[in-house]
Image (cartoon, rainbow, N blue to C red):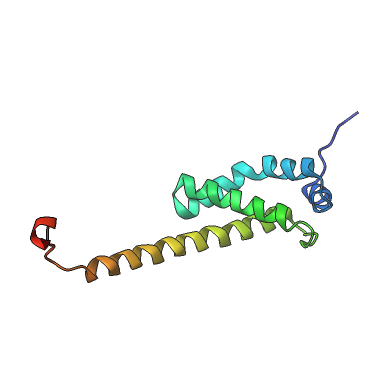
Length: 116
């Protein structure tokens, strides 16, 4: 007797119904692929891991309003790409804001003694 693994789409459907074991199974099956994909975009291990975590937190919190998907793999890849790119944009914007702040600082700073 051959034991077959349930397809991701069937596991996804059970996850949408609130089955936490199915949620864990999707995470375990997809994690390595998702990590490699995210890392290929951002070249930052922590950002890749954080983005995957953000994706799965979102999925679990919104499972009641998410629809059945034709391809769990494609849904996860597209969603992860959006999260990683959004995070990278935020980092670029923060760096630009920090550069602007440093430009606005006076060139000569006074010591505490000079202020007295």
